[in-house]
Image 1 (tube, rainbow, N blue to C red):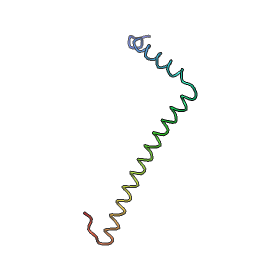
Image 2: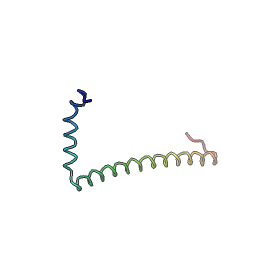
Image 3: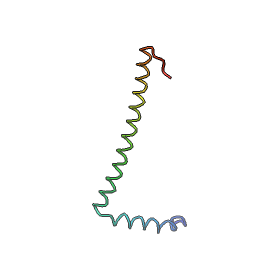
Length: 71
């Protein structure tokens, strides 16, 4: 059953499909490369942030072992 919502969204879906179908292999390569680069940047940032937190905690423990007060 075709609803009014489906009919009103059909031109948008057709336009999107037309744009996507017009991409060449080179276009897809660029798009995928950009997406993978963004994912890599985000993953690296998350792991670097975690590493920094671990190093701060380790530094605090080292100071406590030496008896130095941490402000």
